[in-house]
Length: 318
View 1 (cartoon, rainbow, N blue to C red):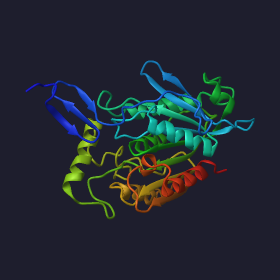
View 2 (cartoon, one colour):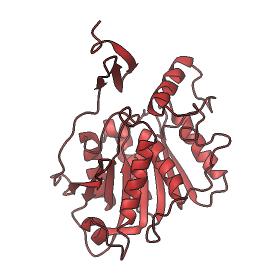
View 3 (cartoon, rainbow, N blue to C red):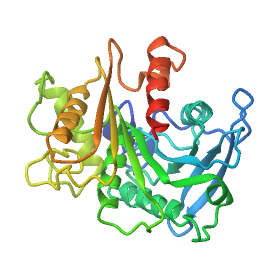
View 4 (cartoon, one colour):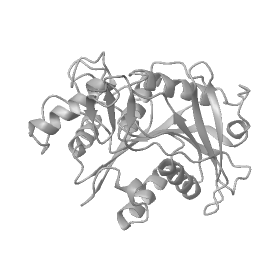
């Protein structure tokens, strides 16, 4: 058989790897340019954060900026660590809408993806982006004028969906042990349908071995050096892990969806956080009757609009 057509690893609906080494991403490959969004007036532009790794970001600025500094959102896209980018139409449209409604400045990070760059590359990239944002604190003379002129680095939020939420959690935890600079404060963490897992089912999680096997196969593919499904990177509640009490933020919002196969992991994270001794305020939002990242697939639906309102309120907390 032709090694360029013979499948070596099939991780549909995300990716296929062929015996020749060819990589076929099945979805999430479209990109759109930065622009002035005609619907919201939000302006976006692309910047390079680290030329040595190619890590970049798309920045979003609302149209009605004034002398008041804006909260800064560091956003991390989902896609199982293997698909999507910060420049896809899905995330571009979502960030335009969120930035307009919340009146925030957003930094949507385009991190290196698996399999070309296995984990922890994505964690390292987003931490580098957080350090880059911190370099714009007052008096630091950071290179990006939008952040220097409009960003309030005392109100920085990290957020992500699915695998991006996994990254957001892990980077926020690492930030508590990293010197990001005295002028930056991580106020909140937003985890949207977070991709967490574990070897033993929690709550009403399915015990069907096949979906569990495929989930663990994806994780092992993304992180070849993993210790397994109870690696603290994928299971933040794992015994012997760093725990949640060290999260360096004041507020956490976890959102889950009733029909999402990883819903129980988000719930367990929320409960674990409340019982960890962490001193902040935790919130949980569950969208009844909805599936994984439904708000990205149908952003004008009633449940998506309600979810957007809750996220906006979270980002606008005093």
